[in-house]
Length: 402
Ligand SMILES: Nc1ncnc2c1ncn2[C@@H]1O[C@H](COP(=O)(O)OP(=O)(O)OP(=O)(O)O)[C@@H](O)[C@H]1O
Ligand SMILES: [Mg+2]
Image 1: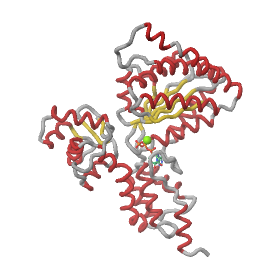
Image 2 (image 1 turned 90 degrees about the vertical axis):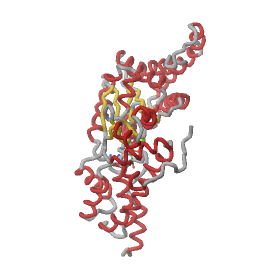
Image 3 (image 1 turned 60 degrees about the horizontal axis):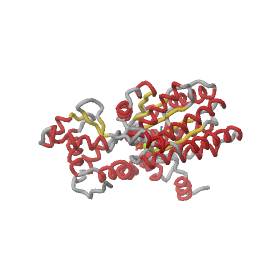
């Protein structure tokens, strides 16, 4: 028979909770409908029908990245081509990630004749792309920072050539873009334009993107017609019954929670996916018996808070400018989800116009967003609580790379 110690060791090796950005949970709770939507798009693509792209938006830690990863796997398992990238503010990086993604996806294609046709399409684009510079030079340099670059023209030709070939094979090209709001303007415009023209030509190209709550606005600002190109969906925290089910399913292979332990976890996590994983993981580690008792949840609670402080809040606080920290402290002191810009300015004892620049900086760096005109909320759930609880000082080490 196992003694307590052995069982303890075994259990710890088997912790099924995975708190951490982009880590695939054992149970992807509450996203069945989203997966059905993806299933439908895949089926339609294989049947030769076109579809809109998809754009997901939500707060930090609600599970955008893992949803996109799961969808990417569904596409590749369905035998279609998928590219995934996390957008940065660097156009060179983002273009390179897309072109690399295209190469990898083609090399992984199992159908030999399709693979060869795709390679031939890329070869053709490479051959003609050497003339782009000559053509651009003959029309004179453009002063418009959003004018097409040679990379964007190559990308457009490449996608068109590939999708024409893919359509003949009842396949399609899926571009998964995480943190889409970060993408440089010119490339974002090119990609939205591609979704538009490929749709008009009935070619199978789909952008499946995720980002912060400001993403839909950023896209429409880039191209006004972006509004009708995508299906916009929000993802957020899970309702109580799904949170409970997620705990039950996640633990079911290795143990279970006592009823009162489960109740406490549901309350602590408030349905936020990152919190679910953090409190679940800490309770598991704190327990040396199975089923896991309430005392283990209580013992794990401060540990989970530490994990969340480090994983979600501290690094963001450190990256904020001192003036942005003052502004966030004012938001936190108001203590509401929605803070009106005028109330924040009042707390800072400065006119609204004077602090508008700080507000803009917070939105641009993704720390806050404007759910409605004149209001601001934190993009990270629980950030206000953290600031009130940990009372970090505005003058703490400033750690932003400029
Ligand atoms: N549907 C879900 N069910 C259970 N756990 C989930 C779910 N979605 C995400 N998680 C967990 O939540 C955490 C955060 O997930 P993820 O990194 O995908 O969030 P995100 O929305 O991309 O966050 P960010 O905006 O910071 O990039 C991970 O630990 C992940 O395992
Ligand atoms: Mg993410």
